[in-house]
Amino acid sequence: LHLLNDLWSALEHQEFRLVYQPKFNAPSGPVIGFEALLRWDHPQRGRLTPDVFLPLAEKTGLIVPLGNWVVDEACRQLSEWRKQGRLVWSIAVNLSTLQFEQSALVETIIATLKKHDVPADKLILEVTETTAMNNPDESVRVLTKLTELGVKASIDDFGTGYSSLLYLKRLPASELKIDRAFVRELSRKGDDATIVSAIVALAKTLNLKVVAEGVETEEQRAFLTELGCNTLQGYLLGKPVSAESITAEAYIHP
Ligand code: G
Ligand code: G
Ligand code: MN
Ligand code: NA
Image 1: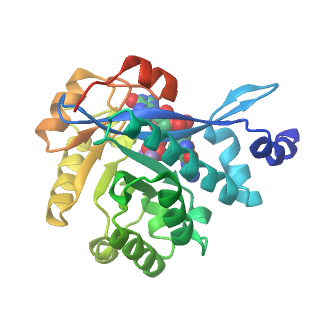
Image 2: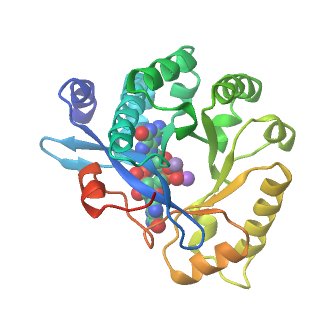
């Protein structure tokens, strides 16, 4: 398809953008940071979401330079916010499997933090459970290096992969993100509530924070808080928006 040709030039032509979705302390606490989410402003097709082009980027290897651009741009934006006094905010970026497994990852992250003068503990790397468990020994090794520097790791889409609890215990992550699938149909009686409780109990045992994503209703917000989730993210609380509109909206917190 043409999309494949366009993909290669898109990075050079600066067609990629990041939007930012806020993360809040449960149940209604301050914004603690943002997740950066990639968009492609295609000159003919308009704004494209990652499901349309990320699989192509993975297959062609473009994901490595593109992923490096995401980390760079997110850190640049965070340093801008820090200059405006938003010193508590963290920034989370999603890493694809190929990006996570590139040999230069640790060096690239260190160089990017330094370039933008961002403290390591304000950067969260979101790695899906599936990525983390693809080569678990290597994941433990890489995440240990990164967390020793202060960088935080988040296990994304948790509950959709096949985690070895033995490895999960050894992974130096700081949070689990419960997949949206368990939040979507959450009700006080159903299985999903039991699953969320079990994930929260597991996280507590492993000393991990729990993030619930995909929070769309007040009922979900209240129940997820009751179940012990620490952090909430979802359309109810804030959609992904441009950096400009975050500055304008001014989520004001010390
Ligand atoms: O933003 P949206 O909800 O459309 O994201 C769809 C999927 O794309 C999610 O699984 C999300 O984690 C992933 N995604 C969004 N931005 C990035 C990115 O910068 N890098 C990688 N690897 N995945 C991303
Ligand atoms: O896999 P990951 O958690 O990185 O996916 C993030 C994706 O989820 C983003 O593309 C974002 O647009 C989407 N998202 C965030 N909050 C909600 C929500 O409340 N409902 C739905 N349907 N999607 C959401
Ligand atoms: Mn994510
Ligand atoms: Na997720």
